[in-house]
Image (tube, rainbow, N blue to C red; front, side, top):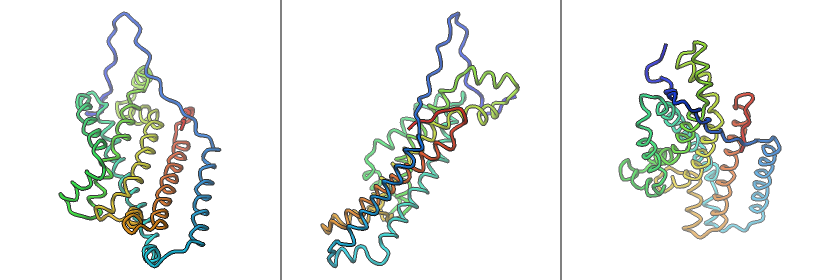
Length: 272
């Protein structure tokens, strides 16, 4: 029994010679030591920043830029942009990657990868400017720009992870009566999880960095502090926006590393 659109890859034809071994799946090792070290670094950076601001002599312009909850508002906007954009990247890139590894849609893979590469090859600020011209200023244009920029690593890793599965293992699963959908859900995807999560981790960090550009499209975020610090030549404002962006990137990278460790299939080593 097969499911339309989810048929398995064709088995290699018998040629009298042994089939080449399947591509080896890259390994990386996430240790609990690494996962506990990074939060310590984040706390140390935040503490040092807080101590520096306590003794810093801020002029009225800097105080105005950092007052009335503007820092927490900018930080929350960056978190929102990162979370929402990553959600849409996942629901677009992972299903598309699965579809492109099926026999019926495999010929479209080069076209899809070319488009995804074009999205990331385009300068993020230029892409955002085009979207603002098309959609106007606001969160919508910023989100679309971030999503387009981050689709490639998740899509690429999904395709690579599914293609790296051992064909003999998939054939054995079909041999015990699994349908194509069962093979996908119970064998192919679990084995591809480490590579897919590595792509998600890359996309998260990209989204944090790209979200700082949302300020130029009216999307807010920590980029507001950075651009304000640059235009007013106020180093404390610029440093605070930059430090918070770095801390947010480190935090989401740590959370993604933790997810890689906890969600990997048992018996597989996942490395960072």
